[in-house]
Amino acid sequence: MQNNTEQLTYKKIFLFWLPLAATWLMMSVEGPFLSAIISRLADPKYNLAAYGVAFAIALIVEAPIIMIMSASTALVTNNRSFIKLRNFTYAANLIITILMLLFLIPAVFNFFIYDLMELPAKAADLTYYAVWILLPWPGAIGYRRFYQGILIRFGLTRRVAYGTVIRLSFMLFTALLLYLAFDIEGVYVGSAALSAGVIAEGLASKVMALGILKKIRADESVKKSDLGYKRIFHFYYPLALTSILSLGVHPVVTFFMGQSLHPLESLAALPVINALIFIFRSLGLSYQEVGIALLGEKFENYIKLKNFAIALGIATTGGLVLIAFTPLSHVWYYDISGLSLELAQFAIIPTMIGALLPSLNVLINFQRAILVSSRFTHPLTWGTAIEVTGIILVLIFTVKIFPITGAIAAALAYVLGRIAANIYLTPPFIKARKRMSAV
Image 1 (spheres, rainbow, N blue to C red):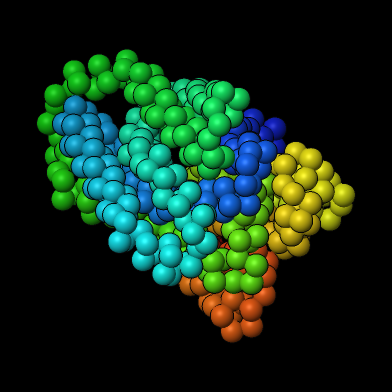
Image 2 (cartoon, rainbow, N blue to C red; image 1 turned 30 degrees about the vertical axis):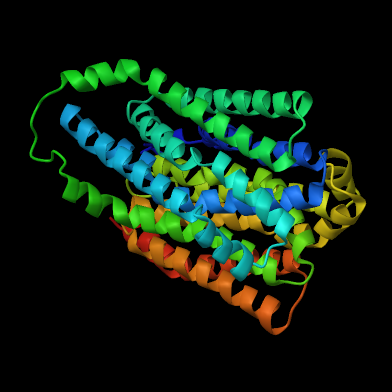
């Protein structure tokens, strides 16, 4: 952590942020690549819609386990704590996999997909088998994030980036192999590529952590702070709740898309729109860790980090604006992503609205950095709850009461929900900064 303001320069902030941002940026190409593959296979509209629904289901199932990386980073100190948290992780992985299997019971699946979402029969059938292909996804996410947390705790953060390279390589190989050598539905290609990539990354993370695990297993010391399962649960459930709220909203949005005007077009275009926006949002996702590490004991580096955040927010939103409001949007959606001319035109207005999201994302991660650094964390869960509530209220208003096109409704909901969270976090953010600066 930086303690001397004069030592921290914008160049140092940039060099600290760049590797973390690069990891997220590498992952952000996953969505556009797979969408482009699916768009170039048969029945792209139905397959893209099914892919969006199946991926949303996988996201909500993985939500409870995604924060296990933070837990292993914070809690694994010796062999006893490693074994307890590993057992906790594996048990959680088993539970979420069983939940996904329960969802695949035909009666349960049909209730959600046919009765609630009213998804067209062809898209629903494609979704069902895609979810089967994604069955390993949630458990593999928990497995690899557990070992990534250990890598981070022991300072081997470059290996986390290496794991991302391995994930993308296996994803790319699987997608191209299925695309070129087999005549199968596009949604199956995308789902298989996702599962193959994350399984490979999980195994690679375990292999890269083997040297550390030998040292951990040699440490049989007993400490007063040694973990019990009750303590792990009380530590972890607020983190899990935050991620459940955050990721759980995506299936909710998908549900509303099925009830909206132009539902099939919205379901087909939304994953492609979100994939483009995520490229620019990804650059700000790591800024929370940057802020926590570099703020200083008394927040003496606040001004420089704030200025860097402002510049980052302007740059990321500016880059997306350059695409959304110019002919580059047609190039991206039609020529690169492979959407039909109809869907490419359909995606432009939601992208214009969503252009605010990258800068709002930088802001909320900087707000979270201040609150976490000051140990004032309870507003974070409330902020996420307010964001989710805002998204749902906007969707009710724009889909059920005064219906507009589904993809536009989703873009408005994401932007207005995030603004509500930013506004809610501002007073505690200011209070935390003043309190720490006065210490």
